[in-house]
Length: 183
Image (cartoon, rainbow, N blue to C red):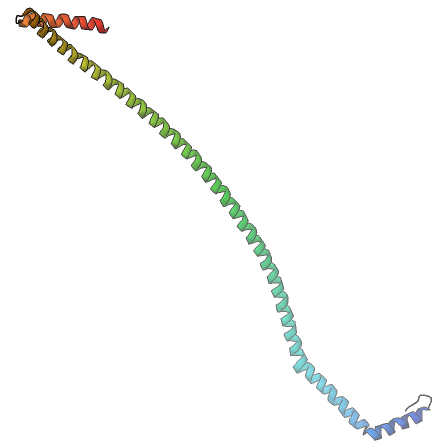
């Protein structure tokens, strides 16, 4: 073991002894140092520089990808907000259309009800007019039959055949009496 209290010359001697035992020589040591420096420069130039360049490119690519992902996330949030806005507008428009349809249906229903009422009134009016016409026609028919019955009854009671003038006078008298009774 080497101790530090030894004088410097002895230290150098001990170092040379250790070097002899291990096969250490200064020229070999310097040659190995030069070889290591050359190897270092060679690796620096042809291995580490391309690797660093590739790593820098990958870092840039990863950074760009992260930036793009953030932009895509923002665009997605904006698209979602737009989608929700469009859905809300569509719902509002649908509600307006439904309200308009309900108003239109109510107006059509009311219009049809008025039309049905008007038609019912027309039918009642026409039926009333037809009833009045039928009543008048039947009254005329009844008057004619009553007049003929009166003539036939008079002929049978009196036992004589009435002349057309007698029949006309009797008809007129009967009709006048029937008209006075109806009013």
